[in-house]
Image 1 (cartoon, rainbow over the protein chains, first blue to last red):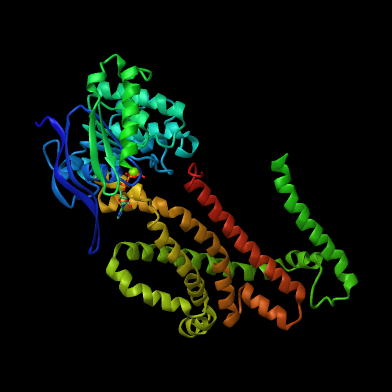
Image 2: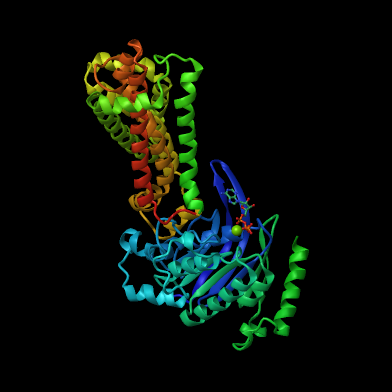
Length: 258
Length: 249
Ligand SMILES: Nc1ncnc2c1ncn2[C@@H]1O[C@H](COP(=O)(O)OP(=O)(O)OP(=O)(O)O)[C@@H](O)[C@H]1O
Ligand SMILES: [Mg+2]
């Protein structure tokens, strides 16, 4: 078993529209070890979502190499080793909370396998959703909806969780709460998380490393390693002086990038 | 309070109009063979119940059968067109062309082919329901968001699962809005068919009453046919509320 979660070499990423090819990101080199919490920061339109979609195998790269858990992104997706959380939660309004979380057990051909009710209860408890199983998405708050989306992504225990601005639409208090809960889930499960955000504070607070991207042309500007300033105790301290100064440094980088 | 006034307000509105109609009409000098008073119309339902019922039933059967056949065919064709690209490209223009033929021009042909029984009326009612539902259903089946499509792709869902668990439920709001409208058009189709050739049904009764200057019977037939539409509409609304329970925003 390989111990890198994602490995990319000279990756070219873009969209093919018939004959037209729009390159969004070029020359992406990236190695993400298993178990890392990596945040991806950058201005709108620089290609953050596009990068995640390539890792998720929702988009094929134009060129270069990419492996996910030592295999192709497609193999990782088919084995349910990658999970995706969308910004707008993407809950199906005709399914209850419980039915939404069970979706991975209902579709997916051979990958769909029955889940014991205990697993559902476990994941719902983990995300503070106990008692909401029979609600419809329209009866939930924005924060609760994101919790359901995360529960659905976690239900068949992926090794890599891809999150595209999952808390971007939430108020600050809810977002802070969910950030802390996500960190504790990450610690408990030991999975790899690739987390896209617009917020410098969030990126620095959550990530062990922060990828700073630039637009026009889209590229990785800098990969910032925060592990030296984050011990296990201060990972969760927002007012830690080292983290605050990192935030200031990222802000400077982003300002130069745009 | 608001619930009660929600119900009471339209009743008051309708009652006031009926009262005005009842008492102002005789004063206006409009002759009774042109416009009867509401009580005269109601009297037809009591005094000639058999006449109304024996004409109501055939129309109801035609409209209901046409509604089911036309919409069912539309849903099946929509699924075919949505998933078989070549068939859509080959036959959708043909369907579009047929839709441009006015139903009034098509009806005599259908009556010529199928005679004077109920069949041609059912066919006309079915045709009139078919096209709007077809178009709505095709749109509905394609109305899932990009994220929803990608969610199913992440889960490696196969085509049938995507159809059953995503596209089909996604199409329901558009399907039901089309079915609601079809309740009225199905009744129109049945009545138009009866105008062209029938000795039974509300359409036939309307024609007979008109030529015999029996305005009370004419208006009673109109009330009966709109009651039919309303009943069918209520049925669709009921099914819709059950099927889509919980998913309103
Ligand atoms: N389907 C597509 N076809 C062609 N170009 C696309 C497509 N989707 C996105 N793009 C382009 O790719 C670029 C990157 O888009 P992407 O969504 O990855 O940006 P992002 O960094 O996630 O932005 P945001 O922060 O606003 O979500 C943009 O310039 C966008 O216009
Ligand atoms: Mg994005």
